[in-house]
Length: 151
Image (cartoon, rainbow, N blue to C red; front, side):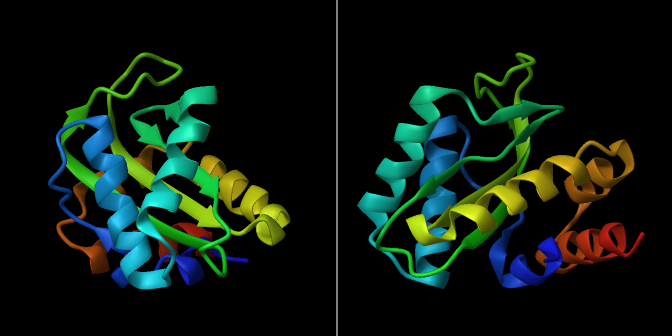
């Protein structure tokens, strides 16, 4: 499965409006629920509960918040780029500008792990992170993902 198949331009928020961690999670959750359905409060609670266990800020200015919700019918991903760094509690202590939010039902656990792994592998590359952060709109963000996955 290609990430670029799950993350179409409609699934990308560039630029994000939020200026703090809670706001970023709320903004991306609203976007995901608007596209994929689900109950906003339930989805946000699932993400917040996962975040309390361990920060999903994986380093290099990237966060991959995720959770499982029975109100979301299939695995969904939305992405966002913050124009300003957001304090996030990342494992490297650095703020975050690049977000990938993953939510699905319990039945999508295997696919959930595959998508998490795929994102983590892709964003290790400095050149892709730079392109994603420099995207002026959702189409440019999606194009960068497409080209990265073609390699």
